[in-house]
Length: 152
Image 1 (cartoon, rainbow, N blue to C red):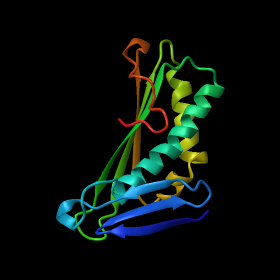
Image 2 (tube, one colour):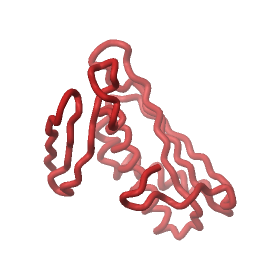
Image 3 (tube, helix red, strand yellow):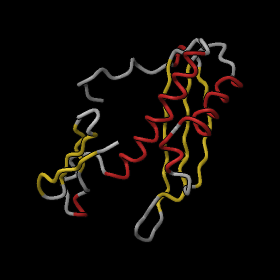
């Protein structure tokens, strides 16, 4: 797998995976010389982890034919105070909406992702890692997922 990151101006960069060829803007906060106009690199690392495990868990839950009304992955990363300020702890919260969901099956899907399938998680093995699952009633499901090109 290959990727590239191109400098635009100031602290603004564009990155893309060469397989997907999709561009992602990156920027630093104003106090670090950026414009604060785009995702920060460490945020993107969390987003990548969330996408990797989220796709795993959602796919497994669908194969289990569980009645999902909604699904979201939330991540919290605690960074070191000293440079290089890497993540010391990451917590992943799996929000699953649906009535009559089997918590053991949801937990198994999470376990499979975290221990077997998620390459991003495996790449962060030096980080203390924890997760939890939150199951919500179907009638509390958030709005439909974002469509391509839409903004939150």
